[in-house]
Image (cartoon, rainbow, N blue to C red):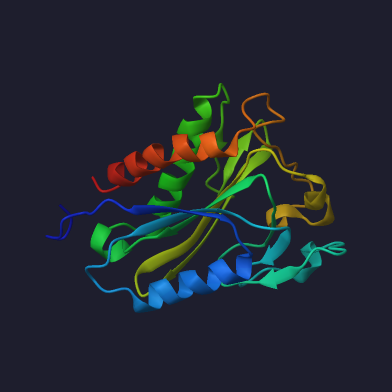
Length: 212
């Protein structure tokens, strides 16, 4: 229980490969139209190649996008890249009902990734000064959220088995010396469907832990 309201488990949905602008619009609509009793939802998706700029992103961190589209969106953070082979997880949660703050949510998302990849033999960690998940100084997963009407949307992205070259066309998350890695390069796993399957129960567990 939280605030006298039963905490409902989120509904997990697999969206497949979908253009980012389409999914972003659906997230906004879901958040605007949801009711106090609406179940929380988490969407698992891949996107065609795209760079995204957060609300306060410095455009100078977008170095040479070339033929890859650039979309300015309403999450926090700087610039990042999405592409096939990356698992993107969007979390539409009623934070007021969960009695959860934004920092606790970020920690739950990072914790779920860290726990999941530990099962593949990868030792990862979060950073308080730069949200996301890292392995030996290289970024494995990015986190970027928006809170509106006391509800979250956007979420995080974990690199599984993708083309990393586009990250060299930007200063990832605003850092000009930040290296990017992925699970396949770490000798861990290259099966995105398996990562998605393993990640969901860990995400549920970490969200529940933050309620206490």
